[in-house]
Length: 108
Image (cartoon, rainbow, N blue to C red):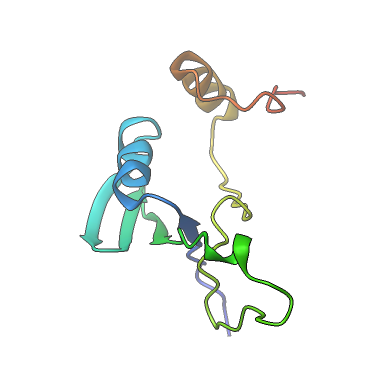
C-alpha cells in the first residue's frame, strides 16, 4: 500500500468567515460549501472545514459529562502543517497581510 495523501478536517466556529479567510488571505479556492461544512483547495491540497461552535460545555456540570463522537467545541484546538516550495514567499505574504501569529517569526 502506498499512501497518496491526507485531508485535514479542521473545526471552525464560523464556516463562512473561515472559508473567506482561506480564500482571501491564503489563496485557496472554495470548492464546496453547505451549512456547517466547506472544502477549500489550493494546488490539489484540500482542507475540510466543519462547524464546531457549541459553547454549552462551559456550563455543564461534572454529573452531566460530554458524550459525543464529534466534539463540537474543538475549534481552535487543532493544528495543521502544510508543506510549501518557497516558505520565504509565503512568510512574506502572510506578514504583509497582517495574519502572522506573534510566535510565528521565521528562523533558518
